[in-house]
Length: 219
Image (cartoon, rainbow, N blue to C red; front, top):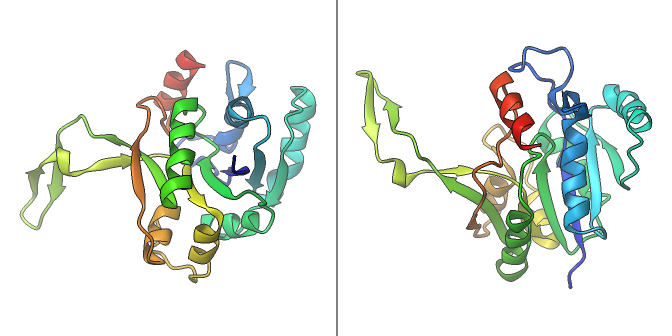
């Protein structure tokens, strides 16, 4: 069995949440979102190596939260960089797993099956990401206004995005540019194929106040 690492990214500052507190630290049912996320991966595999990227300015706050909530799940903290790309690159220097997942700290509702299928697919094919179909109608902006598009042509990308170690390391040799939207796009730019697996619908990225309410019901 391949050793697994997961990089949990927690660098957001919560502008869309209308909160001065970064969204990963906001309490849901009296517990920070980030703790639910880390706990999920520990429960999935207690041997998984968890690397957490945090803004340097918020590291002490996180340590206070861990004391306050008696949070003892083992993980290593890496200082986040200016861009998400920089944070992941810093974390990769600490990863020792043969398979590496990258997961948003504010996705506390990913299911164990999604994590397992993603790692399993990456072990076989090199790179895998979870996706879900779009269920609502979509329109595309045009010069004239908007026009309907076929929603079956599009998929919503989730995390964890999972990769064989050497593939992700090779991809992060590419210098940062604004066209990098996620790890999978960087891996594709490096010349690798990314497999898609079906994710779980509830695996939302908590971004707004309504997302918080949704997560509260599940958690």
